[in-house]
Every structure is written in C-alpha cells, then in structure tokens.
Image (cartoon, rainbow over all chains, first blue to last red; front, side):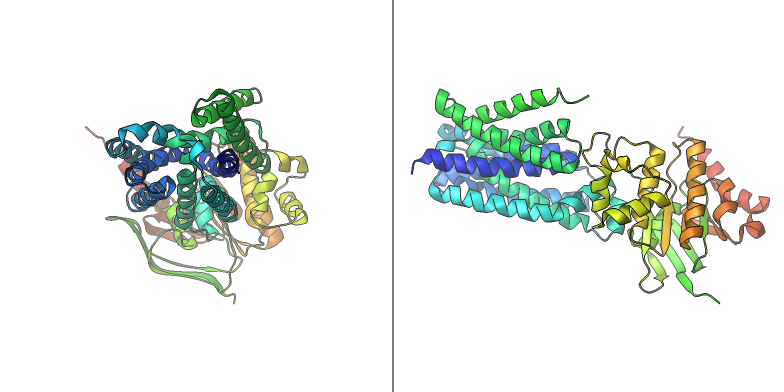
Length: 253
Length: 230
C-alpha cells in the first residue's frame, strides 16, 4: 500500500476528532488552548527529530507536561487560563526553535503528511476513536460546567476531573495532528471547523456533527490539493477549513 | 410536630482571612419556606452554596436523609449563540418528553415550540422559568433559589415570585429563597433570616421585620459604600 492512503486515513480520523474536540473548546471559551498546545508540542518534536524517534511520541511527552502545568495552575492559582496558556505558549515556542534541527524546522511547524507509516495510521485511528468515545461520555457535563459551574457542582459534577480528561484528549489529538498540519497550525484544525459549524447550527447535535464533518472534509481536501499542487498539506488543509468558515458566515445573522 | 429538614450549626465560611459567614445556626422544618434577606455581600449566595456543598465550610450542615435538592443559581448567562437547544438542556437530566412537558407546564410555559429554541436567545424571564422547570424535573423536596442580580424588570421579577409561591403550594415543597427585595418576603416566607455575615434576626416575618432590625441589617451596607479610595 502506498503512504498516501496512510496519510489519508490518518487525516480523516484526526480531522474528525479535532473538529469534535473543537466544538467543546469554543463552548468553553478555550479557543487558544489548541493553539498553545501545538506550540508546547514543538520542543518534543524537536527532540524527536534530533534523536530520531517518533515525532508524535516526543510531542506527547511535552504535551503531558504542558497540560499538567495548565491544569495545576488553573486549580491552584487564580490566574485565568488565557493568561497561563499565553505564557506557556511563547515559552515552548522559544524552546522549540532552539531545540529543533534547522533543516527539520519547517516540517515541525507545518507538518509532513507524506511521512506517515502503517503503524502511525493504525495508532491514529485507534487513538482518535478512543478520544471520541471518552469525550462523548463527559461532553454534556462539560457543557453544563461552562453554563454554570455552581449548577454543575450542585449536580455532583467534578469539574476539575472533567477538565483534566478533556485536556488529555486534546493532548492526544494535538500529538497526532501535528503530523498532518504541523505545530503552528494544529490549533486551527481544532478550532476552525467547530467555529464554522457554530455559525449554522441550531442545536448541539447539528453543531457537533458539523464540526466533525468539516474537520474531515478539510483534511481530505487538503491532502487532495497537496497531491495536485505539491504545496505542503498542512497549510492547504487549514485554507480549506477557512474557506468553509467564510461560507458559514452567510448563515450567521 | 414536623421534622427538621435542615439543621445548621455554627456555620462559618471563610475566603482566605475574611469570614463571609460568621457562626450561623438555624433549623428549617419540612414544608417551611425560608427567605434570606440582607445587603449585597452579606453572604447570602455563599450560604446557599454551603448548603449545596459547593464551597468549603466549618461547622455543621445536616440535611434530612435522602433529601433531594433542586437549585436555581444566581449566575446562569449562556452565550447568545451557543448552539444548545432547550430540549437538549433538559436531556442533560436523562429525562423523557412527558416529564419535560409537565415541568414546563408547572412554570407556566405551554408552548412546546420553545424546546427547539437556542437557550441563549430566550428572554431572561423565560430563562428563569426554564431553570426552575429544570430543577423541578427531579421532583426535589427542597428548592434553593438564588435571586439573580438586578437586571430583570420589576414585572418579570414579580411574576417569578408569584410563580414560586404557586409552585410551592402545588408541590408542597420546602423553598429556600434569597432576595434583597423585602416586598416579596410576606408572599412566600414562613421564616425570615436576616444575614449580614452574622445572623441579625430570625423568625416569622411579622415578628422580626421591625424597623430596628432592618436598620441593623442594612447599616453595614451604608458604611461599606461610604468608604472612599482617596
């Protein structure tokens, strides 16, 4: 089988899961978290490229560290998530630039879908599905937390636990997604499909499915355009998703 | 003699150094309605949160065993374009359409088309009704209602209290209501608790709502607002 098929399968599953997570991220006003975690992944990718091991694995180690930091600071300090995320964001970027070998830097930043192996593709499918089903279990409760934390806690919902599970899910998808669109653009793959879907949805069901489908479509069309034009797939994927977003604005009153 | 549904003993809630509620004790009998009044920042909302176990506290809060509590929070402001239909909001409770319809009827909503609307686009008065219906779905024994900040029109506020009074009669609930509006006290309260961090007065409205008590209750607020920065 050719690597093109592996890339396509990876992109479909990761794109769908990214759209799904994004739908919750916007509702929770955490839109920058995906972006920031993409950058947190950069030093990990840099080390992986330097020492020749799996980029996603390298990224995941740093992502785990990143979300633990965000989660702890969010629970222990009064600082807003936005501030925390902003600081960690630039710190990782600076560190990542220093670590990543000069020649691999572009790949780390915008992704390289052509390097996906069969094992990578299988891992992407399994982990994306796992993320989808785990987050599906906590989705409603997290929406309630975002509507009113008091009401959620009064209904015996452990907001901190939910948040951590959710951040973990984002870390997994970011680690997988950087293969497709790179660390600079993974935030966009999470946010833009959901943002588009939000513009034309009347309820959660439409919103979620819209985000998933647009995430998948963006990735698939991005890879097709990559095959046609030879430009990197990552930026193309994001441009496709932005195209959908612009169209979705028509529906918004 | 009816049982106590709630016993509060030496309740103290602190945020850091500051005591928001200081050594509060009271009992509430079943089917009795308690209205908590007091100036802004008197710890009224915090008291509800302590009763719900949302904030940590010292002292003792003892609810009757297996009591079911419904809660309408003070802060519930969904984003205007959040794509969540009211039906989906009710489905968070794993309930069926019959129960939803019944709960809506209770709060005076007969037009079921509202279920398809997004939760962020309905009026504030309607949202209050939806939240009460949402709390009533589980058939609670007690309803805790935290008055929203000012911002609802007088008319809307008045009908919500009429509605609560009516629900209380129909369902025979215990209601704990927080307000800074004295005029509604007589409508609902069996017992009034005047709170300004410390308990100021406690008892049936006709006995304790004296000018003297009210002056004592609200003078803290006057002092508070009299403080200047420079």
